Length: 90
Figure 1 (cartoon, rainbow, N blue to C red):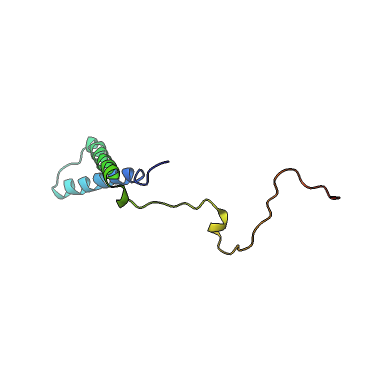
Figure 2: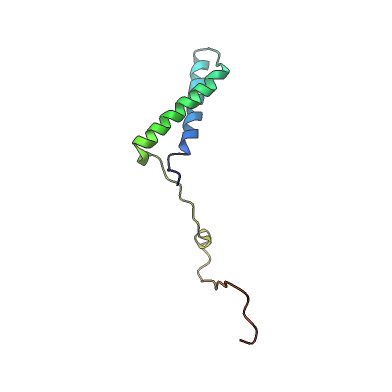
């Protein structure tokens, strides 16, 4: 099972790229192509360490697996038939 903080690694990488790009434009410097990869890796490593040390700070994503949870209008239960269909005479 994937930990709750694992998808946040990508978000952290892009956040570092964005902040570094803004800082370089603020200082009126050129942002080189290799800096994108360096900043993405740095942000990913930082979020990975935070996820290992403090996993409770990352929100979990709960995905419902039951269809009746998604539709609140359905209050009745369904008959589930497993196997071949019943014969008409029985």
